[in-house]
Structure formats: structure tokens, C-alpha cells
Length: 333
Image 1 (cartoon, rainbow, N blue to C red):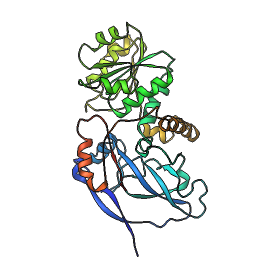
Image 2: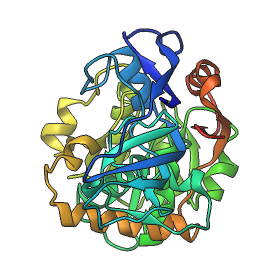
Image 3: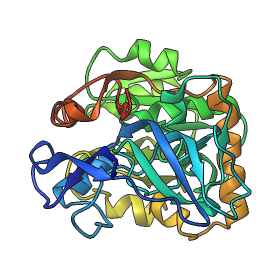
Image 4: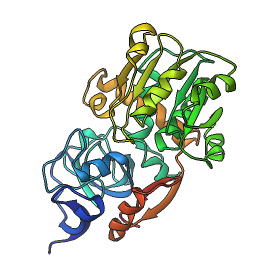
């Protein structure tokens, strides 16, 4: 007799909360080389909302199951599988489609395991935002202990991870937010300085850090916010853009580009995962490093709410609002 599990699916792009629906999927048989995973937790990220609306850089063939990251327990393995065992907690291979109760994946693509104890919600968020923070701090320019960096959208999940990683690496952070009320969040994430964005940002930043040079600006907003970060940089500084929260193109003055040698570059995790500037061993090493920090609590994201799959429309609506933490799905919760 066929068995069914719940999954979230979208068959068209549009308003994210309107295009998602819950369906019953027949459970797949576990063929040789495959592994069946019960999914414990899966986050809702801005990239997922962009995918649902049709605006992400890589769009899946439809219909599709959203979700690019998650954590789960191996329930069954197929013949010939030796790298994982039933009962082990593992990171779901990237871009599996994790907004569902169960997933059958190629076992050889499972490369990261987690201890059975610990918080699965925090573990479930390792795939996208922590390595993005790592790339921003480790792959753009060479930073030394004691260097200052500046970032906007510091209250975002990536922003929190940037602060936490910077603290681990001995870097100092100026953290820009768009409204009041985030000082406690920045302090909790080990950030050094928290300022509200605005036209006089440069003056306030330089006063706060006593004129110390800033080598790197991390930009999740784009638009005029890019220029405000650039204004704060020392000569030969670099802006690393990884987001477009403003919906506008990055703005950067030719004077900064020509006369101050300010550089603008992009950071996109998807290309790194696909091998641009990385090897399989390097990617595995980065995830193992991040696993250590997440497991021992040095890296963590604030979570505002959790939802089950039947609440997916409410969950997506919540994720689209201004909030102070992540929205996480508990497919089997």
C-alpha cells in the first residue's frame, strides 16, 4: 500500500505566499546508492522568497519543492551505501528541496554529519548563511587581526554570522541597521559598534572608530547604501555585495572608483558551491569549521518563529515582514 508524506510545492512564480501549496507525495523507494532522510528543520531564507517570486539568479524547473538547506535523520539507506548509517543526523545536500517531511537523496552527496545532541534548528541553518559570512570575511580580501570592517543589514542572519565570525577571527565590526532597536542584537552577536544608516554615516563611523581605516564593506542592501559604505572605506577599500534588499542597483561614484581605487565585487554562495573558486575538499573543510562553531554555540542565529508545513502560507508571510529573527519550518513537528 502506498504511503504519503507532506511537501510544499509551487507550480508558478508570483506572490510567495500565494504560489506555495501543501501536497501529499508518495514516498519513494530507496534505491541502491540512495538515502531516505526525515527532515527535522528547514529555514526560510530571502533567496527562497526570491525563487518563489521568480527573481532569483537560478530558477528551478516547475513544479518544484522550495528550500535549499535543512537537517535530518537518516531513516533508510540503499544497497551499497557506506558513508552514512541509519539514525545519523546529517545536513541535507544543498538545493535538495527541503520544505517537506522526507527526502530521498544520493548518499554520496551527504558530506556533513552532526551530533545527535544539540539544537537541530541552529544546525539546519548551516548550509547558506554561515558559509556566505565565511566567504565575505575570508575570500574577498586578506584581513588581519584587529582590522575594521563595516556592514549594513547587520540585523540579518548573515549579518549576525558576520559579527560572530569576525569575533572568532579577531576582527572589529561597524554594524549598520536601518532603524532603532538592534543594539542588543548586535551586542549579543559580539558586534563592536551599532549605528543607524543615514546621510551622515561617514562622519559618525569615523568618530566611533577614531578615524581607523576600514578595508572592507559588506553590502546586503545595494542602491545608495552601497555608496554610503564606500564613503566610510579607506583608499583601496573593497565593497563586497551579496544582496539587493533595496531592489536597486549598487550605486558607486566614479570618483571613488577612479581616484580612491574603491572596488566593488559580488559574493554568491551558489557559484562557490558549484566550484567557482573552490574545490570539494575546501568546501568540506569550511563546513566542518562552521559545524564546530554552531555546535559549540559560538555561531547562532536568532529565531523568531517556527511553523509546520500546514502553516506554510503564514510562515512565508511572516518571513516577508520586518522581523528580528529567522523563520524555520519543522516539517515533522
